[in-house]
Amino acid sequence: MTSISTPHTLARSFNELHAARAESILVLPNAWDAMSARLVEAAGAKAIATTSAGISWSLGYRDGQGLAREQMIDALRRIVGAVRIPVSADMESGYGTGSLDDITATVRGVLNAGAVGLNLEDAPGSNGELLVSLDRQAERIRAARCAADEAGTALFINARTDTYVKRVGADGERFDETVRRARAYVDAGANGVFVPGVADADIIRRLAAAVGAPLNVIGGPGAPSVPELRTLGVARVSVGPGMVRAIMAHIRRVSIELLESGTYHEIEAQLSSPDANALFPQNRV
Image (cartoon, rainbow, N blue to C red; front, side, top):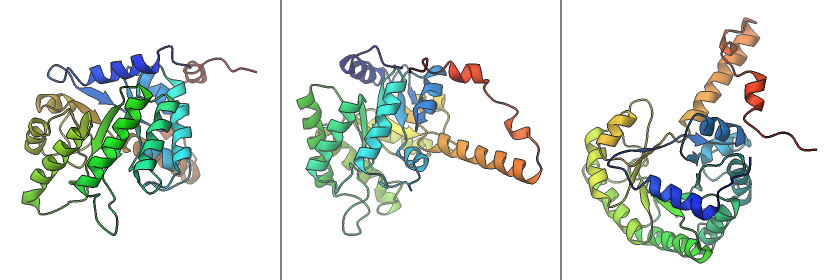
Protein backbone atom coordinates (compact mmCIF):
# COMPACT_ATOMS: atom_id res chain seq x y z
CA MET A 1 0.00 0.00 0.00
CA THR A 2 1.11 3.56 -0.62
CA SER A 3 2.14 5.55 2.42
CA ILE A 4 -0.18 8.42 3.30
CA SER A 5 2.63 10.19 5.12
CA THR A 6 5.17 12.43 3.42
CA PRO A 7 8.89 11.63 3.50
CA HIS A 8 9.38 14.65 5.74
CA THR A 9 6.85 13.49 8.33
CA LEU A 10 8.20 9.95 8.22
CA ALA A 11 11.75 11.25 8.69
CA ARG A 12 10.69 13.39 11.63
CA SER A 13 8.85 10.45 13.17
CA PHE A 14 11.85 8.15 12.71
CA ASN A 15 14.21 10.64 14.34
CA GLU A 16 11.81 11.07 17.25
CA LEU A 17 11.71 7.31 17.81
CA HIS A 18 15.40 7.50 18.76
CA ALA A 19 15.00 10.45 21.09
CA ALA A 20 13.18 8.89 24.04
CA ARG A 21 15.72 6.14 24.68
CA ALA A 22 15.63 6.57 28.47
CA GLU A 23 11.97 5.49 28.48
CA SER A 24 11.85 3.17 25.51
CA ILE A 25 13.90 1.31 22.94
CA LEU A 26 13.30 1.24 19.19
CA VAL A 27 12.94 -2.35 17.97
CA LEU A 28 13.53 -2.78 14.25
CA PRO A 29 12.77 -6.21 12.76
CA ASN A 30 14.67 -6.50 9.49
CA ALA A 31 12.71 -7.04 6.29
CA TRP A 32 13.94 -8.16 2.88
CA ASP A 33 10.89 -7.85 0.63
CA ALA A 34 7.36 -6.45 0.56
CA MET A 35 5.86 -9.55 2.21
CA SER A 36 8.23 -9.55 5.19
CA ALA A 37 7.83 -5.77 5.56
CA ARG A 38 4.05 -6.00 5.70
CA LEU A 39 4.18 -8.83 8.21
CA VAL A 40 6.50 -6.78 10.43
CA GLU A 41 4.22 -3.75 10.15
CA ALA A 42 1.11 -5.83 10.88
CA ALA A 43 2.81 -7.20 14.01
CA GLY A 44 2.94 -3.67 15.38
CA ALA A 45 6.41 -2.37 14.54
CA LYS A 46 6.83 1.40 14.63
CA ALA A 47 9.50 1.29 11.93
CA ILE A 48 11.35 -1.22 9.75
CA ALA A 49 14.98 -1.75 8.90
CA THR A 50 16.06 -3.67 5.83
CA THR A 51 18.66 -6.42 5.78
CA SER A 52 21.07 -6.20 2.86
CA ALA A 53 21.97 -9.86 3.37
CA GLY A 54 18.33 -10.93 3.16
CA ILE A 55 17.71 -8.83 0.06
CA SER A 56 20.85 -10.20 -1.59
CA TRP A 57 19.95 -13.82 -0.82
CA SER A 58 16.36 -13.34 -1.99
CA LEU A 59 17.69 -12.13 -5.35
CA GLY A 60 20.21 -14.95 -5.71
CA TYR A 61 23.39 -13.14 -4.66
CA ARG A 62 25.84 -13.52 -1.80
CA ASP A 63 25.90 -10.98 1.01
CA GLY A 64 28.64 -8.36 0.98
CA GLN A 65 27.84 -5.82 -1.73
CA GLY A 66 26.97 -8.58 -4.16
CA LEU A 67 24.19 -6.40 -5.56
CA ALA A 68 24.56 -3.28 -7.64
CA ARG A 69 23.24 -0.08 -6.11
CA GLU A 70 20.31 -0.01 -8.52
CA GLN A 71 19.24 -3.53 -7.53
CA MET A 72 19.28 -2.65 -3.84
CA ILE A 73 17.39 0.60 -4.43
CA ASP A 74 14.78 -1.24 -6.49
CA ALA A 75 14.22 -3.75 -3.67
CA LEU A 76 14.09 -0.89 -1.16
CA ARG A 77 11.45 0.91 -3.22
CA ARG A 78 9.18 -2.14 -3.12
CA ILE A 79 9.58 -2.43 0.66
CA VAL A 80 8.83 1.26 1.24
CA GLY A 81 5.84 1.09 -1.08
CA ALA A 82 4.34 -1.79 0.89
CA VAL A 83 4.16 -0.07 4.29
CA ARG A 84 3.11 3.17 5.97
CA ILE A 85 5.79 3.31 8.64
CA PRO A 86 9.36 4.65 8.37
CA VAL A 87 11.94 2.45 6.65
CA SER A 88 15.69 2.52 7.29
CA ALA A 89 17.86 1.10 4.53
CA ASP A 90 20.93 -1.07 5.01
CA MET A 91 23.16 0.19 2.21
CA GLU A 92 26.30 -1.71 3.21
CA SER A 93 29.40 0.35 2.39
CA GLY A 94 27.72 2.59 -0.15
CA TYR A 95 28.29 0.55 -3.36
CA GLY A 96 30.45 1.26 -6.36
CA THR A 97 34.00 1.97 -5.22
CA GLY A 98 32.78 3.69 -2.08
CA SER A 99 33.84 7.07 -3.40
CA LEU A 100 32.22 10.30 -2.27
CA ASP A 101 30.30 10.37 -5.56
CA ASP A 102 29.10 6.82 -4.87
CA ILE A 103 27.95 7.81 -1.39
CA THR A 104 26.07 10.78 -2.78
CA ALA A 105 24.39 8.63 -5.44
CA THR A 106 23.41 6.04 -2.83
CA VAL A 107 21.88 8.63 -0.50
CA ARG A 108 19.90 10.16 -3.35
CA GLY A 109 18.67 6.72 -4.36
CA VAL A 110 17.60 5.91 -0.80
CA LEU A 111 15.69 9.17 -0.52
CA ASN A 112 14.09 8.75 -3.95
CA ALA A 113 12.92 5.29 -2.85
CA GLY A 114 11.18 6.90 0.13
CA ALA A 115 13.37 5.56 2.97
CA VAL A 116 14.24 7.92 5.83
CA GLY A 117 17.20 6.13 7.43
CA LEU A 118 20.45 4.70 6.15
CA ASN A 119 23.12 2.37 7.53
CA LEU A 120 26.63 3.07 6.24
CA GLU A 121 29.43 0.76 7.35
CA ASP A 122 33.18 1.18 7.54
CA ALA A 123 34.08 -2.26 6.17
CA PRO A 124 35.76 -3.46 4.13
CA GLY A 125 38.76 -1.19 3.84
CA SER A 126 40.95 -0.91 0.78
CA ASN A 127 44.18 -2.75 -0.01
CA GLY A 128 43.35 -5.60 2.33
CA GLU A 129 42.59 -3.42 5.34
CA LEU A 130 39.75 -4.62 7.55
CA LEU A 131 38.16 -1.17 7.83
CA VAL A 132 38.05 2.08 5.93
CA SER A 133 40.39 4.55 7.61
CA LEU A 134 38.70 6.73 10.22
CA ASP A 135 39.34 9.96 8.32
CA ARG A 136 38.06 8.52 5.07
CA GLN A 137 34.91 7.13 6.66
CA ALA A 138 34.22 10.45 8.35
CA GLU A 139 34.57 12.10 4.95
CA ARG A 140 32.08 9.64 3.47
CA ILE A 141 29.59 10.36 6.27
CA ARG A 142 29.96 14.10 5.66
CA ALA A 143 29.15 13.47 1.99
CA ALA A 144 26.05 11.49 2.98
CA ARG A 145 24.90 14.25 5.31
CA CYS A 146 25.48 16.90 2.65
CA ALA A 147 23.44 14.92 0.09
CA ALA A 148 20.57 14.52 2.55
CA ASP A 149 20.65 18.20 3.51
CA GLU A 150 20.58 19.20 -0.15
CA ALA A 151 17.46 17.06 -0.56
CA GLY A 152 15.85 18.75 2.44
CA THR A 153 15.21 15.48 4.27
CA ALA A 154 16.30 14.74 7.85
CA LEU A 155 17.82 11.40 6.90
CA PHE A 156 18.85 9.38 9.97
CA ILE A 157 22.39 8.24 9.26
CA ASN A 158 23.29 5.19 11.33
CA ALA A 159 27.08 4.91 11.20
CA ARG A 160 28.12 1.29 11.51
CA THR A 161 31.59 0.36 12.70
CA ASP A 162 32.76 -3.23 12.36
CA THR A 163 35.51 -3.10 14.96
CA TYR A 164 33.96 -5.99 16.89
CA VAL A 165 32.67 -7.95 13.89
CA LYS A 166 36.14 -7.88 12.30
CA ARG A 167 37.96 -8.09 15.65
CA VAL A 168 40.07 -5.09 14.80
CA GLY A 169 43.10 -4.62 17.02
CA ALA A 170 43.93 -6.21 20.35
CA ASP A 171 41.05 -7.12 22.65
CA GLY A 172 42.10 -4.52 25.21
CA GLU A 173 42.17 -1.75 22.60
CA ARG A 174 38.98 -2.53 20.67
CA PHE A 175 36.60 -0.61 22.94
CA ASP A 176 38.65 2.59 22.73
CA GLU A 177 38.98 2.30 18.95
CA THR A 178 35.22 1.79 18.64
CA VAL A 179 34.50 4.89 20.69
CA ARG A 180 37.09 6.90 18.77
CA ARG A 181 35.48 5.98 15.48
CA ALA A 182 31.94 6.46 16.78
CA ARG A 183 32.61 9.98 18.02
CA ALA A 184 34.35 10.94 14.78
CA TYR A 185 31.40 9.65 12.77
CA VAL A 186 28.93 11.60 14.91
CA ASP A 187 31.04 14.74 14.51
CA ALA A 188 30.91 14.16 10.75
CA GLY A 189 27.11 14.14 10.72
CA ALA A 190 25.91 10.69 11.80
CA ASN A 191 22.76 10.60 13.94
CA GLY A 192 23.42 7.22 15.50
CA VAL A 193 26.10 4.59 15.92
CA PHE A 194 25.72 0.89 15.08
CA VAL A 195 28.10 -1.58 16.69
CA PRO A 196 27.26 -5.15 15.64
CA GLY A 197 29.08 -8.11 17.11
CA VAL A 198 28.74 -7.08 20.77
CA ALA A 199 26.73 -9.22 23.20
CA ASP A 200 28.51 -8.58 26.51
CA ALA A 201 26.25 -6.48 28.75
CA ASP A 202 29.08 -4.53 30.36
CA ILE A 203 30.62 -3.57 27.03
CA ILE A 204 27.21 -2.55 25.69
CA ARG A 205 26.57 -0.38 28.75
CA ARG A 206 29.93 1.34 28.40
CA LEU A 207 29.44 1.89 24.67
CA ALA A 208 25.99 3.40 25.17
CA ALA A 209 27.47 5.89 27.63
CA ALA A 210 30.52 6.71 25.52
CA VAL A 211 29.61 6.95 21.83
CA GLY A 212 27.78 10.28 22.07
CA ALA A 213 24.71 9.26 20.05
CA PRO A 214 21.90 6.67 20.07
CA LEU A 215 23.47 3.22 20.06
CA ASN A 216 22.19 0.39 17.85
CA VAL A 217 23.15 -3.22 18.61
CA ILE A 218 22.12 -6.60 17.22
CA GLY A 219 19.71 -8.71 19.23
CA GLY A 220 19.43 -12.46 19.03
CA PRO A 221 20.50 -15.69 20.74
CA GLY A 222 23.28 -14.97 23.21
CA ALA A 223 22.54 -11.26 23.44
CA PRO A 224 20.69 -9.51 26.28
CA SER A 225 16.91 -9.34 25.84
CA VAL A 226 15.30 -6.18 24.51
CA PRO A 227 14.20 -5.02 28.00
CA GLU A 228 17.72 -5.66 29.28
CA LEU A 229 19.22 -3.69 26.39
CA ARG A 230 17.01 -0.74 27.27
CA THR A 231 18.31 -0.72 30.83
CA LEU A 232 21.85 -0.78 29.42
CA GLY A 233 21.16 2.46 27.55
CA VAL A 234 20.70 1.05 24.05
CA ALA A 235 18.45 3.18 21.88
CA ARG A 236 17.83 0.78 19.03
CA VAL A 237 17.96 -2.97 18.49
CA SER A 238 17.73 -4.80 15.18
CA VAL A 239 18.26 -8.44 14.29
CA GLY A 240 20.20 -8.08 11.05
CA PRO A 241 19.83 -11.21 8.91
CA GLY A 242 18.65 -13.26 11.91
CA MET A 243 15.00 -13.33 10.90
CA VAL A 244 15.60 -14.19 7.25
CA ARG A 245 18.04 -16.94 8.27
CA ALA A 246 15.37 -18.37 10.57
CA ILE A 247 12.94 -18.40 7.64
CA MET A 248 15.56 -20.03 5.43
CA ALA A 249 16.10 -22.73 8.05
CA HIS A 250 12.36 -23.34 8.24
CA ILE A 251 12.04 -23.67 4.45
CA ARG A 252 14.84 -26.22 4.51
CA ARG A 253 13.10 -28.20 7.30
CA VAL A 254 9.79 -28.16 5.39
CA SER A 255 11.48 -29.31 2.19
CA ILE A 256 13.41 -32.12 3.88
CA GLU A 257 10.28 -33.40 5.62
CA LEU A 258 8.26 -33.37 2.41
CA LEU A 259 10.99 -35.07 0.39
CA GLU A 260 12.10 -37.63 2.96
CA SER A 261 9.03 -38.61 4.98
CA GLY A 262 6.20 -37.11 2.93
CA THR A 263 4.57 -35.63 6.03
CA TYR A 264 3.46 -32.07 6.76
CA HIS A 265 4.21 -31.28 10.40
CA GLU A 266 6.48 -28.34 9.54
CA ILE A 267 3.70 -26.53 7.68
CA GLU A 268 0.92 -27.04 10.20
CA ALA A 269 1.23 -23.46 11.52
CA GLN A 270 0.53 -21.09 8.64
CA LEU A 271 -1.45 -18.01 7.69
CA SER A 272 -4.67 -18.62 5.83
CA SER A 273 -4.84 -17.35 2.26
CA PRO A 274 -7.47 -14.72 3.22
CA ASP A 275 -5.21 -13.45 6.02
CA ALA A 276 -2.24 -13.35 3.67
CA ASN A 277 -4.21 -11.51 1.00
CA ALA A 278 -5.48 -9.03 3.59
CA LEU A 279 -1.92 -7.79 4.06
CA PHE A 280 -1.98 -6.27 0.61
CA PRO A 281 -4.30 -3.97 -1.37
CA GLN A 282 -6.69 -5.23 -4.03
CA ASN A 283 -5.02 -6.25 -7.26
CA ARG A 284 -5.33 -3.69 -10.03
CA VAL A 285 -6.00 -4.61 -13.62
